[in-house]
Amino acid sequence: MSAGLKSLLLHVLGGAAAALALLGIFTFVGMRMSLPMVLAGGLAAGAAIWLVRLEPSRADQLDGPPLDLDVDYALPHGQDVRVRRLEDMIHGAQPHRRMTARTLARTLAEIAAERAQDPQATPLSAPLQDLIDRAQVADPEAAPIRAIDRRTLHRHLRELSNTGE
Image 1 (cartoon, helix red, strand yellow):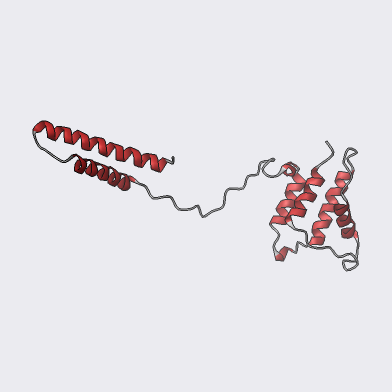
Image 2 (spheres, rainbow, N blue to C red; image 1 turned 180 degrees about the vertical axis):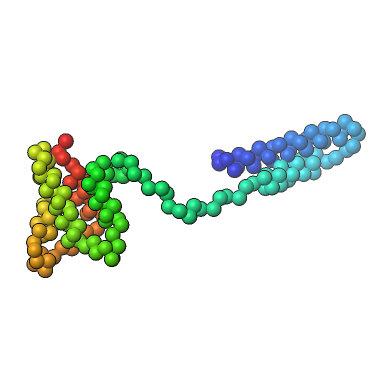
């Protein structure tokens, strides 16, 4: 049961208890009142008090949540600072910054070159190796690169952050 319904139930029961107490006092004094009418009045009074005390819900927050710059803030590959910088660069890419699939592939190639120096690193998958090879070609029209979607990018980033441990 939600907090709002619990509050309503308590107010209605309190109103009914107050109505029964008032009926007992009236009976003791010698005034006769109808039990259903007094009980209905107590229930209605409890519901009315609940409505009056009900606070309106707060407005939605207009600003985005604060950026968490913790090392482990994102996916498992977020622990590598270079990968985090790459993600930030891609996320902040605007048309005037000219972030293309080729520059992204070249950045991935730089990360792969640094990773290749680790003797425990596992070999790269065929799609990632093909992307890196295409990025190294001097003539962009000789080896076109398709757009890299987010899912593929995250798969490549996880692969690059995996050092074979």
